[in-house]
Length: 334
Image (cartoon, rainbow, N blue to C red):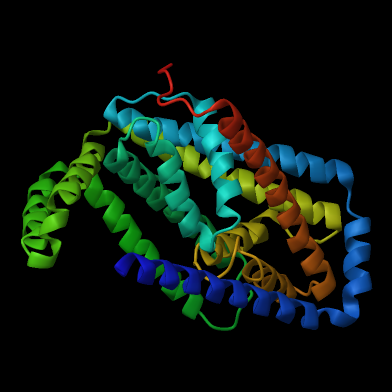
């Protein structure tokens, strides 16, 4: 009975998010209804060489993400190939295209990697750590770009971003401090001593031990992890810049730093399917604040979707290959 209720609840939530996605797409359509010919003209006049270059650059960014995952898993003595992580990264985009928000894709990626040899707590800890570092990089670069070019009248967004950034920096700093681990151990014992959570004591402690491993990272590995995150962020922003050039939008790389950061954070929210609607409304609003026409902004957002569809297609090919030829139980170390 509980299983049936759970399925009904999950399907109801999925349907609700589908309705939200449709509602936002309808809103976007009504916003630019009179300018649809201009949107099509923007797409027709797009520079194909710049679009292909943006796709190649986006692909390189995904390969950097794969290297970053491999680097994080090396903390546990696991050394998967960057290529295998790259394939999983694209497969995540394929499966995640049918799920709400980037958080769902996070769960898919965790499952795809953990099925290799079952290191579930270690893989979850690695993904949380990488996500935390990357979000810090996104916030720092975005807020820095906003300070250089502040287009809004209110400073509320800046203050909110600084508050979230401070919490994330503290959490990341705490992970690397070994003397804090004893306090975290006591906290873990206190949390799992509560009756409803006693059943989770074993997996909770395994996850805690996996997180503790990052306190033993060397400075070289820490610098490599943060440096890779910065390169990934710059790569994605460079793709945005190429698309802006392809559509004739006169915005600087610095401006696109904060626009891409805002889109990244908003898409993380599980409120629409594959970011549809949320991304378009966000881009139209932010570029509109810079004087860009709604039709041109929507064309730019649709090109971002084109890049994403290209990645999803490649992920689908990898997923289909695994279904046909089978998924190996464990990748060989390199």
